[in-house]
Length: 197
Image (tube, rainbow, N blue to C red; front, side, top):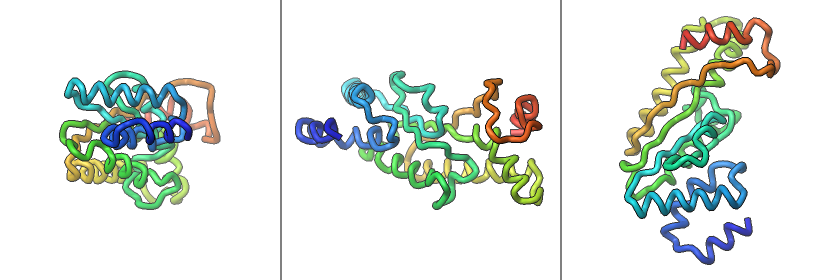
């Protein structure tokens, strides 16, 4: 908070406007080093007339952290399936479009957006929906619904003048973290399930 007060008093408004999308996206970006890096990215982008690549999504966006020219926006454990819903448990749609609206309003076309969603869907959500809905929809139908929902969000972003891209779902790995899922879904069956996506 003290850093933000200092920035408001000492930095020009045009620069503060560029810092907003980076600073507001997650409570995890509160330390000084991240703010300095965000500042560096914006200055680099403006000084060399290079676009920023905004990576927005679940925890897998963190792989892009502190790599130029990527600006990371972690919005929490959001699913591709629920990304189009205006009200979800993670408020992912609101968070996503708040970031999109703030990204370089002057020159949206020069900035690229990479969306990183779908891992949670492949690992947990599709199977969970299958069971919670008493197997009313097949796994294939739920996959199709997820892809359709994700596609609608991508089209909404495109209509706002941005250049959206989709980062592939990371493959599963054996980590020993089994969470609450039934044993049938780890890890060999997860690999088979991801092949359907």
